[in-house]
Image (cartoon, rainbow, N blue to C red; front, side):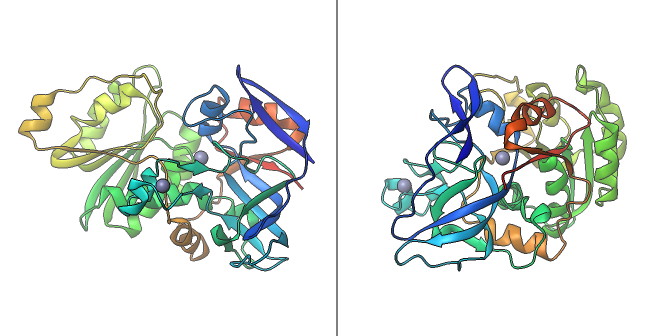
Length: 339
Ligand SMILES: [Zn+2]
Ligand SMILES: [Zn+2]
């Protein structure tokens, strides 16, 4: 079968690889399509939890074409989304119920074969049948699940005032989910006007355009919206400059959520006295465990809408375009169509 393969040294190619075989409890999926995410580029350069050679793609929708012995969770012919996490269930973290921090944390498309391929094998217990849901909506199940986990971590009080930095797929999904989870008002700040327009169309109350080179210049406009600061500020860009401006924009007693993926060695400078004297909370949210079911429900009920999010579809052989689109500010989500 054809698959994208990442190799050491930031190299990738479309390769002919062996079609995977199902074992007991596993399912073979004919991949329909898989979302491309900024994490994929970090993985290409050896970041996050990359393990080479790697077939990337962690946001997949597929059709079950074969089930291994004893496999339960879906039937042959079902369209499904996949919980791409593989948790060992036996390490200390798993045994203590903190399995997101599994010491052998596996993630299809990050350190195990993922969806940028014609076929993928997954644990059948990790399948979520989507019924007649459009694969163009279902393909957002994984990023929505990560957002669900972020909202869990944020633990918002009812009627909160929330600011989100970033209007990529994540920011646009979070902006909607937060409204079902306690936010009375959501402000989205990002550099690209066309993405802010999508944020508005999907229900954001305020949008503020920020400069990529000088994000702090937008502080005054954000202060105007919330003179005493926001109850929660979500950094969903991965920019350390944005994280630095997020802290002073947080209301006394409020929370900063670090959601964007910064470089492993990146540092930001925060004032400890400010965190101390204003009793700020800084939290992180990096992935998800057990959130796919709720994410799918939010997509099925329309509480999270995805109109306008898919801006490109490419074939496996056009993966260079998928990578290039990650740097094109007019693109929101690129989908790789496998079959
Ligand atoms: Zn992702
Ligand atoms: Zn474990």
